[in-house]
Length: 145
Image (tube, rainbow, N blue to C red):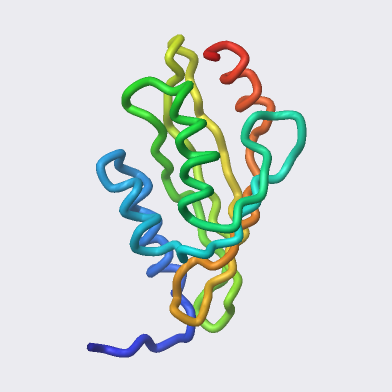
């Protein structure tokens, strides 16, 4: 096995990992392969259905990911990487993402995200603070619940 050259994933490695989020068929593989089972995940904001703090990958997927997909059509949500800042020798990185999705009622769901990420010593995502268009999420739930 080839050892990594840096203690944390580099921007190209982060882009490669996050590319799994750009296809529905590989979306969950991103979480299995690159996110710690004990991730500390916060979705910032108040007064919208996905605000919260979860202390495991399973809890985040059940309480946020599955909840969001309950208002989306069968194609769900995919995320494209816009930019990556940090990583490599720094345990912190910011990943900018652009979402593509559609709600069950036909409403577009083009959310934008900034995930502030801390990598663990195993090079997996250990902590996330996620910022997103909370108004779009609130409208999607109001129109599709």
